[in-house]
View (cartoon, rainbow, N blue to C red):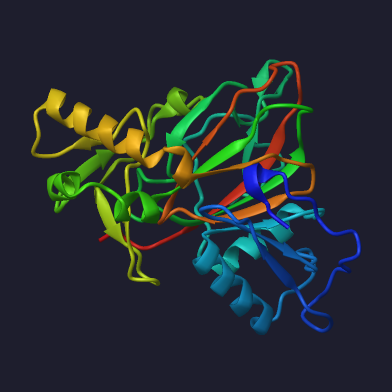
Length: 295
């Protein structure tokens, strides 16, 4: 069964398993990326054979979808630790009362005059999580707690495929190039503590440390100054790369349901989010795992 356009339906017959019983099932989306994992209760302890199979599927399919999950913050952080050491980020400014330091909230809700999370309700530009750090995210683990009735879909682009099909002249232009990535702030729908300004320089084409495959690494669509080029030339090249990388053949879109968990590989994917009604409630909880320095 296809998961194309993010509309896969989970199997009601698939009983949750722990590391002690049963068999998980991995169903590829049929698209350029993504697979649904059935038969796993992520709130239960995961033993090494299960973790190894999930990591192998993650590397193969770039993104894993789990439906119908119920996770506490502690369980969400524990799940993310199977993919790396969680980031602890302090520069996003919203009400963090009661949150674990590893947890970020993606939400449009405002309570008592203060945002309960970041991201708002508008369109969020194409980006890669934590690209502004020397060690960007390897994995993002995102748990859908409250989902609006329409809109707010998350789109993903396969940056392996985008690089591999890139024209040779463009490959020649980006070979060896590096870009400066910063935090983006309000451009990603967040209020930001202006006393902190993380930024990093990374290659425009990176080699995945586990698969050895090359992928475009562009940071955020409206940023990422390319070094060694004049401003206009850099802007034109960046736009050419994004126009190519977000062609339909490279993109898969997820339509959220409450209880969904997505785990994706930021080293070879970029993502964006569609807008939704500002009076609808949307709450997702996120942990990003710190990855390697891109090369």
